[in-house]
Structures are given as C-alpha cells and as structure tokens.
Length: 428
Ligand SMILES: [Zn+2]
Image 1: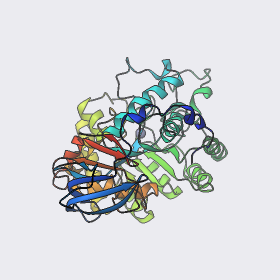
Image 2: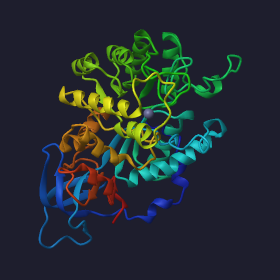
Image 3: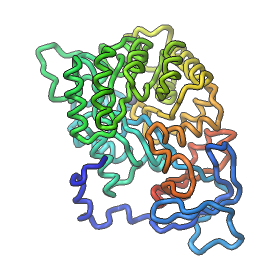
Image 4: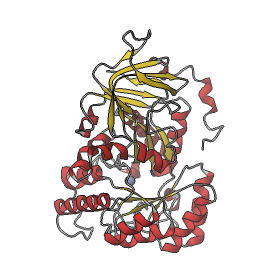
C-alpha cells in the first residue's frame, strides 16, 4: 500500500548507490536448492531469473549459460522473512548511548537506513516492521521501494497503539501535568479513541496495526503479565482495521491479554511469553499466529542480563528464559501456527538468523525453523503466492549459504549471497 506521490522524487535521483551492484544476473547455479515445503534438497540446480521473478528451476547443464553466477557448493534457499522488527529503533544500545528523548525524528530515519541494509545483507529480504516512533517504518518502506536505499521489502505498522501509562507510551515516569500527546501518536483509551487512532494510522498508509494488549519489559511502570486494553477496545481496533483489509498484531506477554487479543480477532500474538495451555488452545482454535522472539528474550535475559526486578516476574532471568522455551515447545507440540520474528531493535540488527539455533534448542525441528522464516512467514503476510519458496513466478528473493541448513539452520548466520527482486545485493 504505497503512497504514489511520497517518493516520486526518487526518479530524479541519478540511479543512486544501488547501481553499484549488477542488476542483470539471469542465471544462478548452486550445488543444492532447498525446497522448504518438502524439507528436501534438489541437487545441482540452475535458477533462471528475469524481470525480478524466477522463470525456471531445473538441473544445471554441463555447460552453463554465459554470465551464470556460480555459487559453487552453496545451498540456495528463499530469501528469509522476519515478521517482528523495529528497523528505526536501536533500543539494544545502553541507555546512555540511546536516549529517545534526545533524538529527533531524523535520527530514527538515519538509524533505520543503516539497520535496513544490515538486515538485507544478513539474508532477510522481507520484514514486517511493528512500530517505532514517528512513523519511521513508513518512510523506510517507501525509501526502499523507491530505490533510495537498500533494505528489505517492508510491511509496516505505525507506532504501537497503547493505553495511557501502557507499554510503549512515552514518559510514564513524568508527573501528570506534563502533556506527552505530541510524542505518542498512539495512546488511546476507550473504543472511540482506539478507532480514531487506527484511522489516523490508516491515513498515514500503514500496512497493519500494532497494539499493546499487555504491559512490557521495556517500558517504565508497566509489568509484562498485566492486561492493558479491554477485549472491547481490541475488538474496535480489529474491526476498524478489517474495513481496510488490514490485520492487527498484538503485543502480549501475559495470559489475560493474550486471551483478550485472540478473542478480539488479532491476527498474531507477539512474544506470548507467559502463554498457558488456555492461550495455546485458543490460538490453535482461532488460527492466530504466534511470533515468539526467542532471540530478543535470550539477548535481554541471558546475554545482557537486564535488571527486570520491577517487572513482577517469577524467578531470575534464567528461569524466565527457560519458562519461555517451555511455552515455545508447548505451542509447537500443540501444532500452533508459528512464524519467525526476532524483535530486532531490542537485539542488534543483522543478528536475526541467530534465532534459528534457539528455536531448535527449544524443540522445533530444523526444517520447521526454516519454514517459519520462509513459507510460514509469507503466509502470515499473505504473500505466499510469491515469497517463501523458489517456484517459477515467485519474486527472485533468494540467498545462498555453505553448510546444511536442514541439519543445522544455525549455518544461516553465514549467508554470503543475497539476491532481492532479481538484483544481487551481496555476493561472496
Ligand atoms: Zn517488538
């Protein structure tokens, strides 16, 4: 849903930096192609690409067509998809280096430009970007689509819609006399305000709506287990979005908020950290997607060992992470729909593929871990006809890597070839 005029000026920019890489690679040869749906390899393939699409996939002939990019012993697979990023956000940085109160909107855009490139070069050719301040994602999406900058194809929300004092609201520690309304663009209380805010985001040309159905880890004064919006408020958001064919992604850690969001018709639950058997059963029954960001949880709880002593959590950080792995395994074993999302922004951008190993460690099969970031993520986005697989007619978004992703998807941290829309953006 691009605004036609927003980046019309792109045509005036002389071919930009993007012309530095070749755009006319027509044939790729690789030792193996990963058929993600079948969970099997096809040996020694030639992939033909034209006009940004895959034309054919077949056995490589002994004599390769002129200009073929030979990827040697690499495995080629579909470009990866992360359905939970914040490209304009660097909240993984320590507070003294990253204080949103001192940053202008332009700073978020500049950060996003750098982060978008890092994400694409890590092999993620598509992302769903679920909130940061100032509608940064929309500017990034349009700049990438207009050819100004390199980055993944983006599906974006506005800033996360939240309650007064809720997760994602600015300045929860400030005294009530301070008016924060100019910063938030996303605080809403009551069904009418929720509808009005959703309409404002649609006016701003979002692709989806993001709401906070519970408190969160990253915001002062909220606790992850506590519900925020009522089911009726969430239902108002879903109904208002539905009229324009848009889905609602609901941030939710605690069970009450998870159940509210599923009952209201949310398309996906983000995090689902403390989801119980009732939440898993409700998600299964409704077909609600679960986006469980093991990477961000591992980064915050284990790698950085953040102080969450104000968050009313049971046990220490290691316990919370172990419990989250248990929820992940229970949801997977129950057959819930799961798609790959990392919460990059909480984690440094470009490390997205590190989540594959965490998913396997938490009990997912390697093939399903790869599917979650390809065909399953494409289904969540509604683009499964053209992304998440390498069949003729699909977008020519593909990556290549050494090693055996079906045995160990952790090797996907080593992607060293990326093609996006038929254009080689990274080569070994
Ligand atoms: Zn997030």
